[in-house]
Image (cartoon, rainbow over all chains, first blue to last red; front, side, top):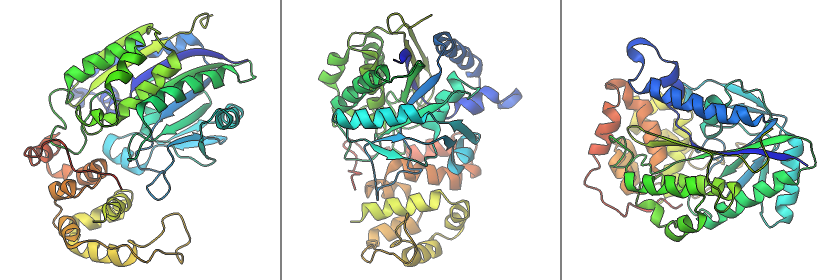
Length: 287
Length: 119
């Protein structure tokens, strides 16, 4: 059976690529600290020696649209082209091509359906920065096959937070039941408090530092019950109008396990949003 | 109310480099053309297969015609779609982050709960 080599949860900041590669007067003052934190975070994945990456993210109205919107979707294809014209335009993100791991995708779809998750699928999926940002930060070689899993954190009605936790638990079990001698890292990205297109956007900090402080503690301590006791679809409007992306962090808490304390925790307070990075190593996972 | 159609306008324009420029330069003309040609297109189907019932309200047409991101927000347009497209059109006329901050300042009178964006 496959081994979960690491569980990793991260924010996906589309400005990292440009900030980290810019030089001279174009290089923002926070870039060096940001790069140092990312390199330490990257080492936590390298140490896990993964063969395959299960990537949880959310399409930002690129390929998935309101005429046909899945709640949870698994990409099953030999390849995934990546990044879109408007991400190139706004963030300077490069076009990428990633290999797919179709056997794991087929296993997740079949066994996930049988476990009560009505997963949608795509055989031709162009992925966006919710998946490519963690490739750029954690595995810039982009040399490992992936299985992308998209969640709807963007277009109401959305599944409730508890459903994200349940899917995270299920994905962990589905990887562990995959009959392959492979090491799989489960990587998911979301947001802490975030406002996009509203009056609280692009402030000196994220829109709700108090929410961010609590959220980091929930994640770092694996405090799923504490998090679920406070976080609802309605409550997530208060910290910022794009904060429903926090539900992808809740999915990753489910994948990491109840009460699982993260082995690596780091944050970076930037303008507009707080960055947050977490890695868990399941017991016995490291070689 | 046709929140879905507002989102469809923003989505189809934002993903097309030529339409981004056309909407920046000629919002009224782009709106007229779009409502006639694109509003009822089924995006993942053969062009001959079309919807028949989608049209804007006058308030929605005015918000689009006037590049009014505050009105679009109040009408329930998806804030991510509006922001992304308006950055593409207008960031170039300002210094770093100036446009994004001014965009927020123009909305600072808006309080929670924000308009519903469900479609």
